[in-house]
Length: 438
Picture 1 (tube, one colour):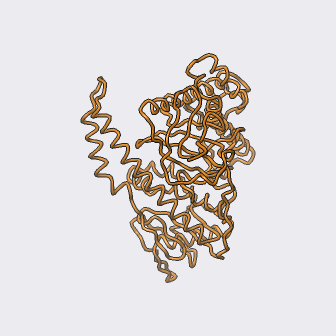
Picture 2 (cartoon, one colour):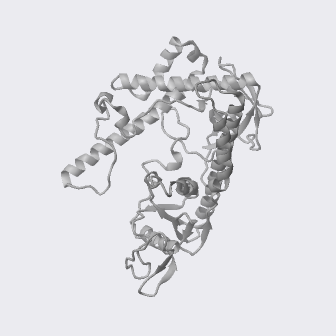
Picture 3 (spheres, one colour):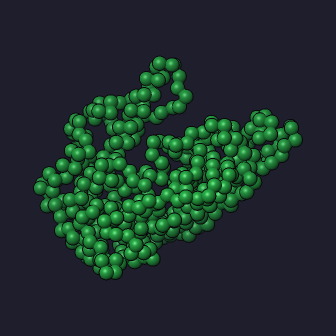
């Protein structure tokens, strides 16, 4: 599946209707989650049936298209299913630990019964991965009804439910003339800081056949450089946030000065807030596009890509390096490497990062060094840049099957498939790209 994204051009009352549709979808999702919490043995089909009850009970919920209500319920179920998987993994981990006395991999969270919501304890917040209620939703998703694309121009889309959105214009350079209406499986309305967008999920084959290159590469992610590979090439770190940090701080101060505590905020405050949010959105888009471009080049030039299995969530707890780690965009880069590896039929392997920067690639002697030491110097006479030496060790680990592939290192589904459109049965579909065909 590929995702084509267009910006929406509409009238003010239509934007308000889109906001109303987003709020209604959030309401249905939260009510479905509450229904699961209050009842035992509720499955995804029960949540879809519950949407009809909500439509009869609440007039504003009945105005939203039935497939959009079902999509909101499926979003709730995706979080529930993810929590079930975590419970099963924690239970299996506890049984394995009690059997052998130790475990190779630590699984976070408490042991719980995945079949009974009442067994999770009184405080749901302490349960790792427990689904939460949405407070600030920014999108609503339709299936194959509730909308109609203009057959002549295909640059306008009409929403036919009772919410009142009507006919809006699609602004963008991506052509959808080559796709039939039945290929469009999902339509999603998204609100961002710079406007409203319409995403069209088109069901087509996205895999590409590429000629083998016979090359394997190891990647070491860093802060001084974006990455250093085992061939000696170094990709510079763009540092998009650092370059925009002064302007972001200035806009944040301007927003804070206009804030009035305990009073209704003025138009000047909301304008300052929007300017601040737009710049943050620009920085995030720059980081995402850079990661996408570099990952595509790496996967197209090599048959085997080995990288570190970094736990970024724990690394950003370092108060001295958290901002630089977030600015580097390691998570986005890994997501796109795994995606393009799947698309091009390449092998992607994640290996443990332990001692990759300490061991010598030539003699495997372990040489302790601090982060300030940027050159690897060994007693055997081998001298190399610290990051390049680490990338060689990463490649060796990957080729010696010390890594793990196939499960995409973060679970049974690839990291690029997390959060994409849901099919009718609640499973994830593959996503090509948000806003572009690559």
